[in-house]
Amino acid sequence: MKIYADNAATTKMSQTAVEAMLPYLTECFGNPSSLYEAGQKAKEALETAREEIARIIHASPREIVFTSGGSEADNQAILSAAALGEKKGKRHIVSTAIEHHAVLHTLKKLEKQGFDVTLLPVHEDGIVRPEELKAALREDTCLVTVMYANNEIGTLQPIREIGELCKEKGIPFHTDAVQAVGHLSMDVERDGVTLLSASAHKFHGPKGVGFLYARKGFRLSNLIEGGAQERGKRAGTENVAGIVAMAAALKEAEANREATALRLTALRDRLIEGLAAIPHSALNGDAQKRLPGNVNFCFEGIEGESLLLLLDDRGICASSGSACTSGSLDPSHVLLAIGRKHDVAHGSLRLTLGEDATEEEVDYIIQTVTETVDRLRSFSPVWRDLCSGKSPFIL
Ligand SMILES: *Cc1c(COP(=O)(O)O)cnc(C)c1O
Image (tube, rainbow, N blue to C red):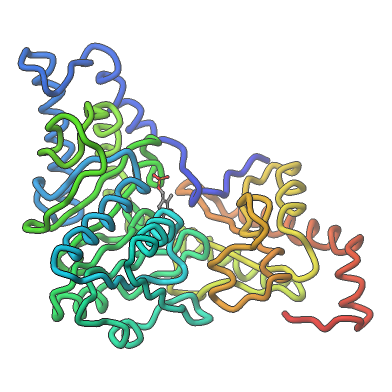
């Protein structure tokens, strides 16, 4: 069996999206800035895509800027808010400890430029508390940036409550919604967000394209200087085919969203129940307030990398928050933020189900992970020490 269970890393393009993009790679290859017909056809496609995307997130088309993906959108949103803040002498930003690196590293850069960044902790359930956020707001706060749903443990953040708090205080609110768009109902009015980032390849669109929503009246600054594309907010010839495919993928995801979420939630809960039966294991993040397809576990006494390699041998593509996969020595900042000890965080496994996942596949994953964890433990010195009582079990 071959099972792709790493949909939080990226998704397979949908057939609809592939078909939507093909004409813009072939016959209709014109530059949208050109005045002749081929250019104008590309321009029309671009504006139709903008309208479709805007409608789905309850925005107006003029509030959508196309970017090269989620990272660029996050960078542009945060740096724009910082630039506006700076003009008013406001240099304080509130965010959380579990953000994506596209947010955290941008905030680090701003800290070096003299900004003061408050990273709110999350509780054991992987969720930030609005009252703690409220208490962190200051007179000089120029931005609040909190992700919609976490990419590792799938936890959903109280975006609407945070939006309300920010609105009351007149503070711009950005949300990295890369894991949420195409999977959850999105409404920038309901949620009171000023800025929102999304990326096509997380909802069955192509890689290298995304968008930034910026509320009317919020002045974006541009990361890239050049031509007047995207009303001067993002220079560079537009990725027409990618943008058209992104809109097609989002439309399709939106049409199936509720049915998909119901089905995936049931499969997710089945997977959680199955893996929870493994001794000395623990689910990471709240069991209910999480993305429909996200399952993330820690297994004591093993290394995440070894688990991934053995699972790959048996046809399962998954991911881990342990060190080597992320190219650093420290385990996932998200797992540490929810209070997992280093040793335990190293033994983590993230499984993110796709729309086409089946019960049969979930049962195969449960059986395979159970056997593989057993096998790894059978030759783990760490596990031996735990069992002999030489070191205490944490989970
Ligand atoms: C994937 C992801 C990003 C980065 O998006 P890219 O399009 O790959 O640059 C940012 N934030 C979150 C939460 C993500 O999951």
